[in-house]
Image: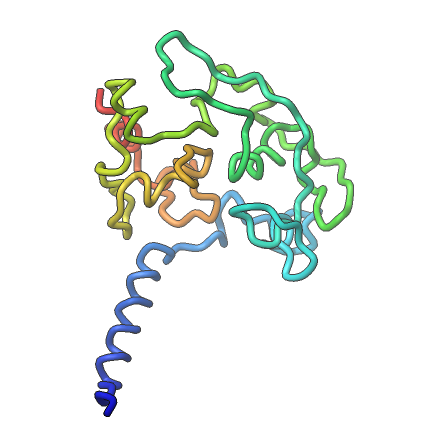
Length: 209
């Protein structure tokens, strides 16, 4: 005989789960730097320049991607003190660079080829930017000596309770979106940061000195 289900308990647990999720995702892209609804080229749309409800491109970590991707080859950051091995930007970083490297027009979406390039783009020379698209794991933390173990160190992101690995990395890799939230969830200073960098708090999430 099956044990009767306590429906009130189920409802309560579901409510807690929804509230927990909402805490981490409570803010909106509306009104942020990525709200393009007032741009003449967007057709008044917020989501469409990046995502399509139908016929989107299958890109990892980018549901129904709708923007033309960059085919650029990048000059990567290097340093004699760098123990990580950055690769050509991939995953979430490739999506960011599809607008931010300046090689693809920001209005190139939905199969259209646009002509409006982003001013102040980072370009294809990333040699003076924080390295991205590298594996950040416990082994790197030990080898470097100046990094926290991402499998142990908590991220400290408002509304999140996981480690760096769980909350900030993409399949174990550090990408642009490890520090920036394109959907503006926890932006406090206008740079779409995932948490405040007051007192270098964001930097010191990963760096221990």
